[in-house]
Amino acid sequence: MQDRLVTLVGGGGFLGRYVAQDLLEAGFRIRIAERNPKSAYFIKPMGGLGQTHFVAADITKPETLARAVEGADAVINFVGILKGDFRKFHVEGARNLAEAAKAAGVQDFIQISSIGASADAASHYARSKAAGEEAVREALPQAIIMRPSVIFGPEDDFINRFAAIVRMAPFMVPVMKPDTKFQPVYVADVAEAVARAIGNPPAYRGKTFELGGPEIMSMRDINRFILDSIGKPDKQILEVPDMMGSAIARLGFLPGAPISRDQWLSLQSDNVVSEGADGFAELGLAPRPLAAVADRWLVQYRNHGRFANKAASAT
Image (cartoon, rainbow, N blue to C red; front, side):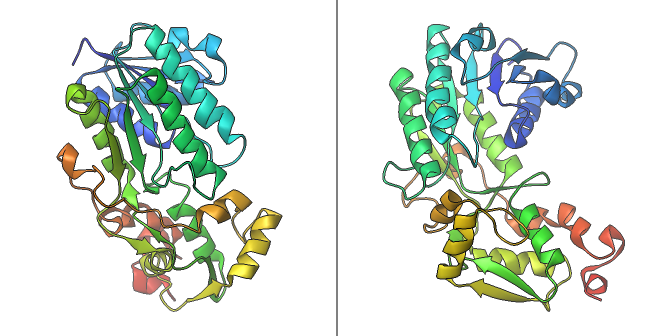
């Protein structure tokens, strides 16, 4: 692997940093492309001398991409947003990067998408993800598409967000769309799937993988898990009526945590692996459940942190 160079566009982000670590451990050389490369300098000590370097690039500006992909054996696009101009980043940006990779002779390309990506999805986010996949495949039909469900990990903006709400809520925890189902997946497992595909691209070219964890959990289940994990099992869950949830989303916020109208629309559909879809098994991997790893960082939300057990935290 020492002669193979992989460009990670957005590699300093939540998922990218884990993929970078896996690739470095496997002996790849990596190039981290960011609008502000300094924000990803923390990755450099993960590898050996000269194994990692950085370049300034912006997928919304095609003229910045040639240097980012030049000489690369593979390119991975991690860029994604939860709010804002989805088309600019998820569709036009993905197309820009795929076309730059094609022009540079890059054969292998991985597009990080999302479960639920569909041209007829209710949310702009999901529709833009589907359009981004199509744009990439138009330039590079052999591109590999990775569609993870909601990703959790120490730096996530999902479990941590709800944990903060749970900790601050005095008596009841408000939960929107409590029956909507997710298949939460551990960030390190998604990273390993991406690294596995990069390690043997001929076996996976042109395929789409839906990456979900081993458990399907409703929004209610996730919040109950968090309550139990941080020592607040006595707090009740308040199921927010749809009419009220829709009204809150129109205002652009949920008490304690922002939610956009488009995120509300995303909650109308389950976020789980499609029946018959390729996933972790086809990559020879077994994902870990939320309960196996979440306690490592959820302790920060207990009353006395890691110095108290769950029962003591409830007092």
